[in-house]
Length: 248
Image 1 (cartoon, rainbow, N blue to C red):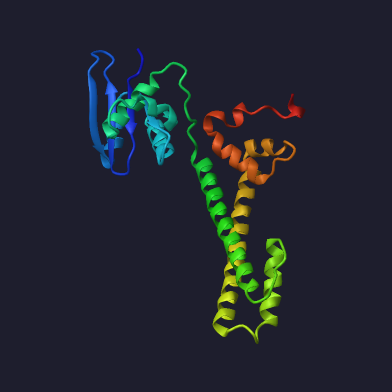
Image 2 (spheres, rainbow, N blue to C red; image 1 turned 60 degrees about the vertical axis):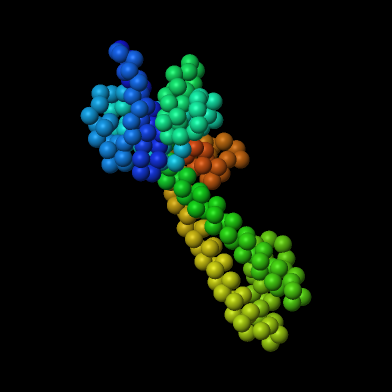
């Protein structure tokens, strides 16, 4: 007998559940508070649980998988066409359930904790790099107002800014000179933070078989390999990667 398909509309505090009893065809739609979700599924026989691939979906997929359920995630664009009425939690849960019944529906692979952590590392690094670029561009613009043209490139710009501040120490108002020195200190701190994150990413790549194998592709570096493996998810992990040519 096919397992019951249970759809969950995820939220931070209140979850909407939708499922149909296979034996009777009875439709159930209920609301569960966050603390009730795990006990509800812990007391149910193994079911197929479907959720939209949104914030916290991978976390709940891992939790419910450990309880013995078959968890599947559906991309939001595949759920949207099945919302039959005004958008609300109940309608969303019903749409998720309906989408899961479609033949050939494509599901999103569930990420492991390590993969999700690596994606978080990439996002943190990306934000820090963006802030660093903004800081350098602002430094370039502020010094330009005092006749200083910094060279292209981050490292060259920072080094030139240090020399410019030293040579303009008698011309710049003290309050601006001190603030620009603070900005240079922030740039040094950003460099150190980004370098530490990149070291952690490199360490993970060295210890992950899938990353090492992807890195063998010409032109694929550490950041590309770790990001790719993190996005792929556990269903398409190392076991499904092609073998090295030496192993064939």
